[in-house]
Length: 410
Image (tube, rainbow, N blue to C red):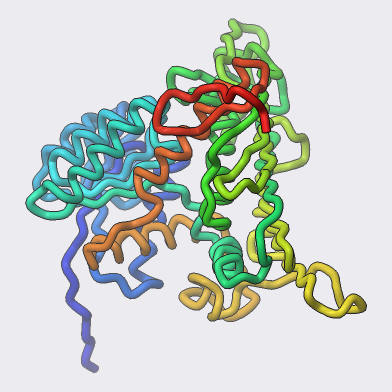
C-alpha cells in the first residue's frame, strides 16, 4: 500500500486567551485543514494566558505544543506566523499593535477595541503593515457569524437582487444568561474591561451583519441604553457565560448596559431597528436579521441556524408566503465541505469557516474580511449609540470623528 501526502507549508499559530473564545478558535485551527483545501497547514505552536496552571492545562487540552504566561513571548518568537487574540477588549490594542509591528498576521476577536481611538490606532497599524512591511502582514476581525451558511447565502441573494430595493432592516440579538439578578459579576459587566455591555458584546454582531448583508453602512443612530441590574455578587460559581452568585457576600457595581435599543439610518436612507439584550428570558442565542425589500424579504434566526426564510413578492398571490430554505446543499456557502444534505452544522463551524477564509487569504496574499477598517466602523456605530443615549436619544452621526448630535432628527 502506498500512502501519499500533499506537502504544504506550515502556518504557525500563537493564541492569547483560553476561555470561551479560545476554545472555539483552537477547535477551528485544528479542524479547518481537514475539511477545506488550504494553501497552508495550521500548526498550534504556543498558547498564552495569565495563570500558569490554567494555561498549561488549556494548552494540553486544545492541542498547543507550548504555553507561556507572557503574550510578549508570542510576538518575540520568530517561529510564530499569526497571532490570534481571544482576550477581553481592553487588551486588544496593545497585543495587536505589537504583533503587527513584529510582522505577525493578526486575528482579533470583536469588538476590535474598547474605544474608537484604540480601534483607529489598530486600523492604521493594520493598513501600514499591509503596505510598509517587507512582506504584507494581514489582519482580520473575528465577526464569525458572517460564516454561517444561511447568512452568507442571504448576502448572495441580496446582491443578486432577490429582495429588490431594500426598504427596511431589523435586527435583534436576544440572550437570557443575565436574567438572574444574582448571577455573578464577570469581566463582561465591567466597562473598563469590556467596553460596553449587550451593545458591544452582541449588538456589534448584528451591526456588522446588517451592513455586510445589505452592502450599506450605518451613518446615524438614535439610541437608548439601560442597566437593569445595577449590582452583582462579587463571587460565585461560573456556569457558561454566567453562573450562580454568592448572595451572602459583597456585590459589585455593573458599569455596562444590560439592554440596548437603537434606530439606525443607513447611507442609502434606509431605516433599521436594533435590539441587544442579555435579559430576554427563554432566548438563548436568538440572533435575528430581517431585510424587507420591494421584491421580497429574507429572515434568519440563529437558534435555527441551518434555515433561511425567504419571501418572493413577485410570485402569484395564491402562492405567496415565507419559504423555509434548508441551507445544507452543496450550492450553499461552506456547506459542501461538510456533511450530506440535511445534516446540519453548528456554532463551531462558523469559526472553522473563519479560519479557512483567513488561511486562504494569507496563502494567496489577499486581503481578508472583515478588515480592521470594517471593524472600526462598527466601533464608531457603538460609540454613536452611547453618545445618543447620553443626549436623550437624539440622532447622532457616525463618522471618523467623535460622534456629534445632528442639528435635526430626520
